[in-house]
Length: 219
Length: 421
Image (tube, rainbow over all chains, first blue to last red; front, side, top):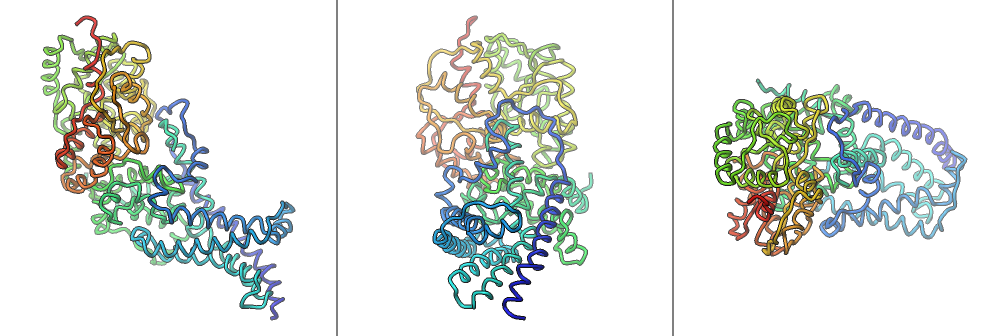
């Protein structure tokens, strides 16, 4: 099998399978959550509350008062990593082409040099997070195999993408193939690891904000 | 009631709902909740990380309500919850959590960790892993009517004393009154100034109110220990009395968790909405103030600060009212750092103060309150929860701090304009 054949497989049936498992996994996980339901609250809610579920979905993105100072590494590396990953996924020209091929939708790309810098920053942030996870007694205690697997599965697409773009180590076709495989691995793992927070955090924040809304507090 | 592991695990299964499934799904193990918890910040011990306190509940969720977890369990790969593990977790779930709710305000993915601890306690108590002192308090609340064993004659004695002191009749069993007033045992035993202050304020404002002989205790250790059946029994006494006396509103006293029990959990425990309102005393006083019925004269010149009880502020939405009321009587009011919905707990909520085993940890956790207080330089600490009050008095004593603690109702009564007097 030539590198080109491998690439064809990666972009073809492998991608289809990965996407299918990803979509099925996300639907399953959402079903697992929502099917448990929630009892209606019989206590009378406060009127004109300052908060709401939707408000918390947005506001929880910012650190609460005093927290940034207590945990600067966690917050800053978190922002840098998520921003870099988001820009790379959605604003790199070849990725937009892929989305156009899949959905017909497209939008303007950002300059490649900017994405490149964002990806480097994201990888540095991931390294900082790993170091922080291993150094902090709290994070170390909370961490299991799943945390390190999720970390590696997130780093690989960034790293392979960066290496493919800069023609490092392997021949471009092979590197691109590895990049696509790494994304497929991420897609398959996402619904079944903590990476699912990419979806469920909106649900969690909403429930949180809604609980506090009824009590008359903006959370 | 015999408690077994199977009952506990069943209770875990029963309490897990969509929010909890979503919360466990979302946790990225960032550990930020630790920085919101006074038991972690004041000890530096990783085991006090809030989300860690839920580990047994998390595994039950995973094994019972996720496909991968179920597969793991079928194949015998899962670590099942054991009695030994729950014994180990008991101090984490009870001694080092006051259900203060700070972690729920901080979690970046939005997990309401406090909500989960409250639910987890249902399984802990069903499996026989609740602290002895809390079991005893709950038993007294169910059998005697008060977690501290206070009976009606004790309150009757206080009523007589208050009547003699104020010359105002304390109404008892008055059908058709607007308000049913509840007390906490702590107020009956330690803080008689609450009832006397309230009588005077209500007299001046022309409020029609009453006490009920069989429902004067507002506290509810059932919700602290996590026994919904007992919590329901305790709440139902109040509901029955309120309906019998046909009051429009029940007033929750200066007590944090009583407000949570009565205002937010009560209707859900009873399985139906109330036919009356429930308000915290601060809400009632604020309404009287807004209506011009609560007149005060003179200002307190002492430097004062206010401690927001967690269940009244952060978990109950009563934050502005105490500040408006204090604005009337405090000339030198100073906010603590993090005041309001991010205030730090006194360290004794959620049943912790009733649990003697937790005492040294609670006093250690009080260091954060000490720092907050010192930042204000205030010598008088006002609050609206008798439990916070006693816990803070103990903490202040322990750290040799010369700070007086008073209830807001009693402070207002001190500056009340009494037209008849």
